[in-house]
Every structure is written in C-alpha cells, then in structure tokens.
Image (cartoon, rainbow, N blue to C red):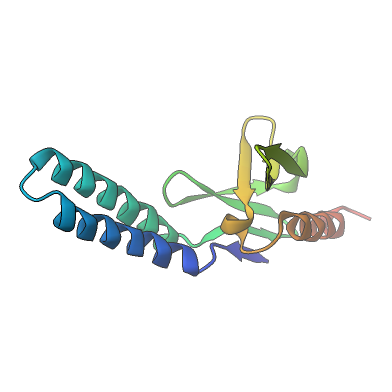
Length: 138
C-alpha cells in the first residue's frame, strides 16, 4: 500500500509562487526589498512544490514494515519490529480541528497529515494495523 500527496497540492503551491511574483510586479514597482521578499517566498513555494513532485509517496507499507519519507526526498524503511505505536493525534486549536497520523519508532516520530497521505489518517491507521497483524507470526 502507498499513500501519496494529493495532486492538487503541488499545483496550488506553484500557483501561489506565480501569484506572489505577479503581485510583486503589480505593487513592488522598483523597490528592491519588496522584490527580494517576493522572490524568496516564490522560490520557497516552488521548492516545496518540487518536493511534492519528486517524492509524492509519503508512506508505504507492506508485511515487512513501513517506508517513510525522511528529509527532502529520502526514504527510510522501518521494519514492524521497530514501530512502537501508530495512532491518530487529534488537536483542536481556535475552533479548528486537525488529525495527524503519528508513527512512533522510539528514536523518531513521523507525522503525516491527511494532505500528506491523500486519505483520512483513521483509514490509514486501520490499514497499517491489518498489515502489521498479517505480518505477525502465527
């Protein structure tokens, strides 16, 4: 099984980068500081979108374990034996509710939002539990 970034996210980030440059052209005129800020923001959005395009799969799992994204686009395979806990973390802040999948290995915690997974974290946790159970010796 694989869970990947929703395709609309990198497109939206690239559109945001273009919008920042267009707004700078419209309002910055000849101010080098405004242009510099706009270009830094546009570049950051473009790099963020590039990560989504270069490494769209954020989490993959099979009976041997899970593979997570680490850093910009590296992957790290974790056997089920090192995965201590998989759960959904729910938070409410200022009336907004967020859910993230938390994968705890003891040494590191990997967090994935619904946007990272392209699916609700609850569904992913259930699938991971099934895969982990099927990998356990009988």
